[in-house]
Length: 146
Image (cartoon, rainbow, N blue to C red; front, side, top):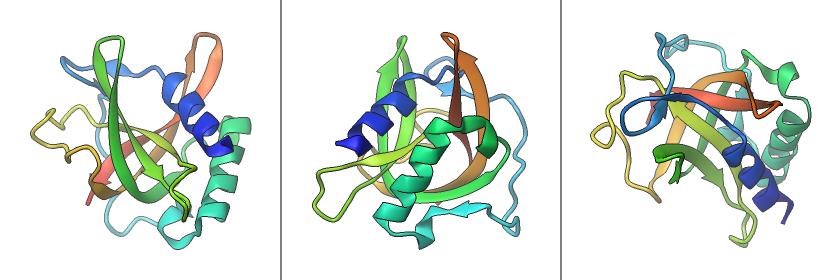
């Protein structure tokens, strides 16, 4: 249940820049293929990953600017009539999701450059902060999609 709450809070408390059809970030990529990754969730089990994601929720400023690689199920939803995206990690029983809100660079075109919802993907990017409705929120700017 903690995972669902974490995901909902991360997903609903993030404000991003609006493209025509989805939220995005207008900047160049910072991550290259040979960049050292600060938090590689692809090498962690669910318990370790959900613990770190919970820490990110509690102390977002501590993680700002860090690079992240995460693998999970691609998810989309609509917020203020714009698409928003996330990568969801599931526990072994399939009952308790956790994950990160991801934001594409504005160079990505929706829906052409996006996977189908439910597809398993790997995303690498940089964690960035934004104050929305008086609360600091952390989101992953998705720079490399695999």
